[in-house]
Image 1 (tube, helix red, strand yellow):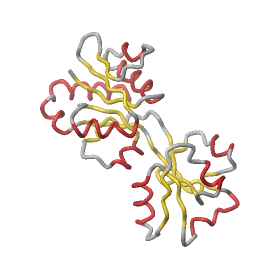
Image 2 (cartoon, helix red, strand yellow):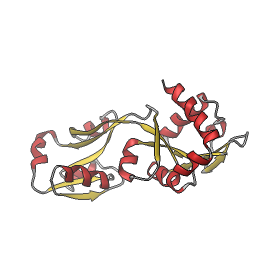
Image 3 (cartoon, helix red, strand yellow):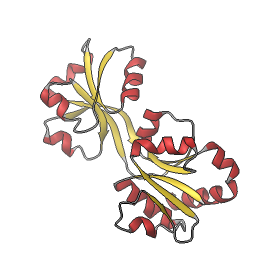
Image 4 (cartoon, helix red, strand yellow):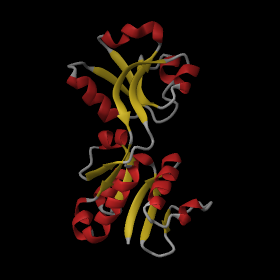
Length: 208
């Protein structure tokens, strides 16, 4: 059995559609259920539905053989696994955003950055030789500049509608092309090569 760690939400739906194109029985993922551990009717595939940020953890540990995670998550987590394919789904950008009237805020000596990407923010600004105050948040990141909690945010942007609704704009694109990636456990890729590699080949053909 090939075990997948899939992110709950919209990306799981896109992932299931892509896997289905490759001959994977994903019908169990289409059912309305609260179960987090599922398996295909033919017993060839298992699925763990987890928080997006947890996908690399499950794959690195070997609980899952393969996983699908956004590049933003992989950058943030920095786990020891193989990144096999850019699936081209779940497209977004990782950006620094704030008020347009304060476009010079990035030159502040003491910049306050609200984000759930703590490790990424630390690396990005350290590479510039800048010290910042990181304010970890896990929801409604856009609220931080609005309330004065932070000067800017570092977050993923898709349409930009939430930023616009709160009077914010993208000040800088840090990673302009964030997409979902197929990742593999290093041991699984060796021990289960006969099953896993052909599947990866079919996925590669499906996204071309």
